[in-house]
Image (cartoon, rainbow, N blue to C red; front, top):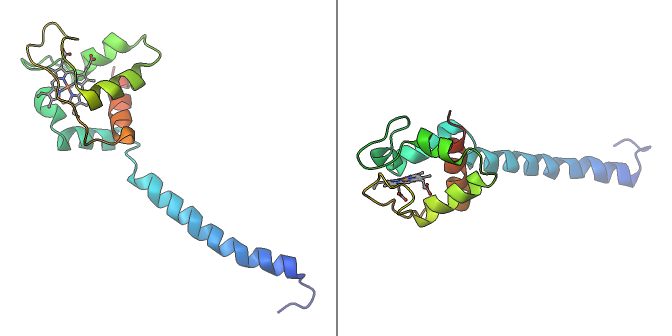
Length: 123
Ligand code: HEC
């Protein structure tokens, strides 16, 4: 041990180790959040969104995700609005859809937000 090292300095050197562990844990949490479009698309496949919605064509069942993005392009709160519609379901917003959109209470708020962001990023 360096005799010139003050007790504070050695305490700081020690404290930097747990800080590394915390940084690593945060990186791990970030990796499990569906941040990218690819992860959102994977969610959409897992939860059968793409069973009803096509990305660029109206299906007989549901509006295309691209058309949804176009319709809400000018809304400042589009992501929050669509996130809410995905969680709660939707009926009557699209007159050409005979069916209704099921609610998805199983999806977490970050997951619905990620799906809404993914839809709004389409053009
Ligand atoms: C059973 C078929 C079906 C499934 C599965 C489905 N949707 Fe829909 N979705 C619809 C229909 C039908 C509408 C139009 C509802 C309406 O007219 O209000 C719609 C509308 C929407 C809208 C627009 C709502 C609005 O207010 O304009 C979004 C966004 C959406 N769906 C996203 C999703 C996502 C994300 C998933 C998967 C988590 C999903 N949908 C799964 C049928 C479905």
